[in-house]
Length: 376
Image (cartoon, rainbow, N blue to C red):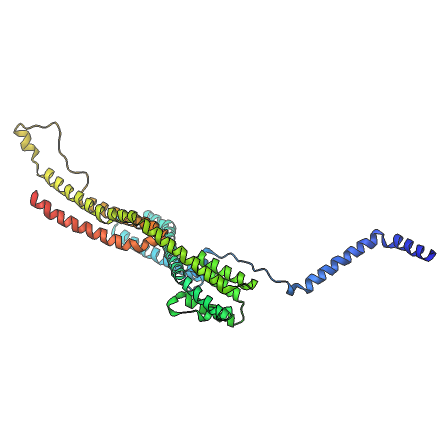
């Protein structure tokens, strides 16, 4: 008993001291740090999503394989070349007019290479971004149209006993177009040793399509969880087809509004502008034919006087054509929004609207001119 009491007193006196407790706490921290360092490779790395520059993202989603820095350099050189041509034209005009002094020439060159250069650069970038945005939209529409059929074929291959990577590969058909090329790239990347989920996510990031990204995310989650992938892909395909069918039904229900807007733009507006232009010509010819001096000398005085029209027929024609172009653009955008739910689809209608509108305007102008010339 005395020995046991002496051991307890020793533990109570020495092992419970603050120095011992601090040493044990420090030892545990060192052991934890050691485990973290040596087991670092066993911890799965969390993928970091790097922020892409807008231009780089636009180029990738539009399918253009070019470095963004080189692309920017080409745009800058194009702006410099255009500005140089403008400067040469101004120098040529200044050299023919000897009244312009050196100060005004220097001022014009400074304005050209500062403000005009920035304006040209801005317009080039604006046009290119519009073109890239339209290309991205067309790629998205093209891949969403064939995605349900591809998912159904993949589902059938998985139900037949194929693994997911082979099922994706053997479901490719030439009629799938750009989707077939992308799946071939995914298959090549997986054969070279890359993970399937990484290759699929890289494929989904190339397109600005929520439908594609959600479908790929569901496929990856089901693949990692070990679920029934075939049934899932079949349900995703059915859901996409139902959404597409619903959009077509909604488009059919609002066809009346699209017809009304199209008729007002394509038929009514050009005929009214052509008729107004001919009325302006007739009024101008009537006023120019009046002999006011003879009327006053004969005692037929008036309390008012006639003057020439405030707008010429050439100016009215320019105004009419500009108004028809603007009206055609916005009408095509409205019709596309009503029928397809997206303004970008309106650019497919715009060329047809513009050609028909301007053609009908010129044809109506000729017809009204022949008709009214026989009456007046």
